[in-house]
Length: 190
Image 1 (spheres, helix red, strand yellow):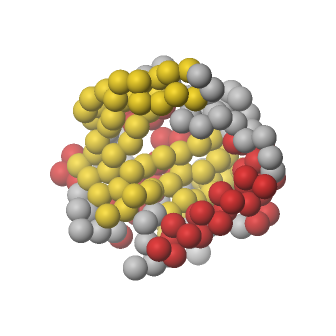
Image 2 (tube, rainbow, N blue to C red):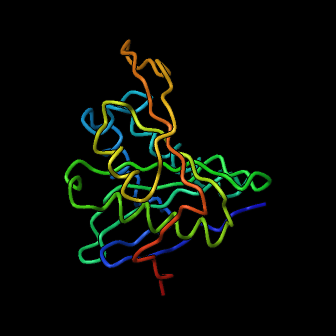
């Protein structure tokens, strides 16, 4: 079952399907060693990776396993990053949340705002019962985002990633429908 990638807006952000015009911004985002510090893969070194990312976004929506949306500011259209749901399983009514923001956009509440908007869409439209997320145990900022939107830390995956020879642990978070408390939900874009 294919998914229609949503177009959502909040007071400050617009969440929308990616376009080919996002290729350069995506490469810049994912090639940053600072942004990718806590990811389970190294920074991109070849611009073609951005095109493959966009193709994978379309493939996820087409095969019904998830959606990723570009996030931009409504005021000036600046690219903030992306937010997405993957591993959507309709039978289990579950999915995994992920997000990646440009370093210049950190500390402004954009990740929280985008995650909250996408979660509201997911619980309302996909009828999810559970959303899971993971964060590197050294990434306090990402852990705060997840906790602000209602996720509960459920455990630790010990030494689950090795990137460029560096071993790291991840926290596992869960958010259940019954615990979801939306605030300032997204408004479908016009």
